[in-house]
Image (cartoon, rainbow, N blue to C red; front, top):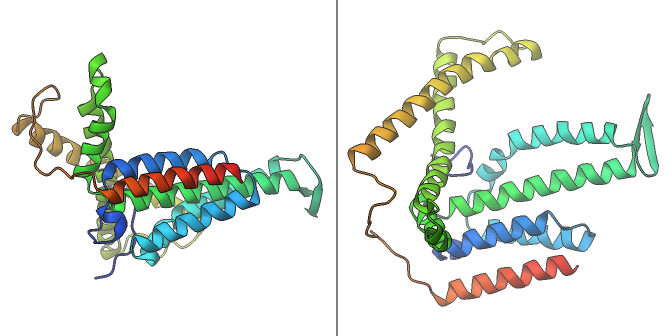
Length: 264
């Protein structure tokens, strides 16, 4: 059965080059490119960054259609936000007018930059989490933040919380789909096609979703307590990935590309 969408936190097992990389490499590269994306301003840097994300998506061998479908809610929100920016920002040279509303080049530029940055950030986050299991993400965060253990920073707790938060995103997505299917089977909202009534339908969706989320969190807490989870305890590693030449190459390439994007 084909996937309808791939959201942040969805792990898809595979054998691509990106799947085989160490989770630490992918985490560092993701944060590095996220910082770079927020600093780019030239056409060359926008183009190179877009090509890079496209190549990463293709090399990860993820279902592209499912990835694009997951961006649909973000796309709608960004369109609305971009329209607000076009109307509010009135700096620069006037481009054209629609009735009493005048669109300026500065507003057009800012709307494009915000739209592009958000889409790029979502894509690299999806690629990272879809090619890395939550177990390896937890391990990578613990390793990268391990120096903070010397100042009694709760590294293991932070790593566990991040891992659980990422895992809960696809779980809540599945719960929401189940609630929608149950309501459709009962004929709820079938004849309410107006925009106002569609908005009202969100309340009966989010109330049971919130209850299910609390129930899931309670079950998870009980399971962790039953297994004797302690943040200060001593733990062994079930499966530890060894650093390979490919990891060194990928991390070096990420740093070079990030510097190149900043230079353009």
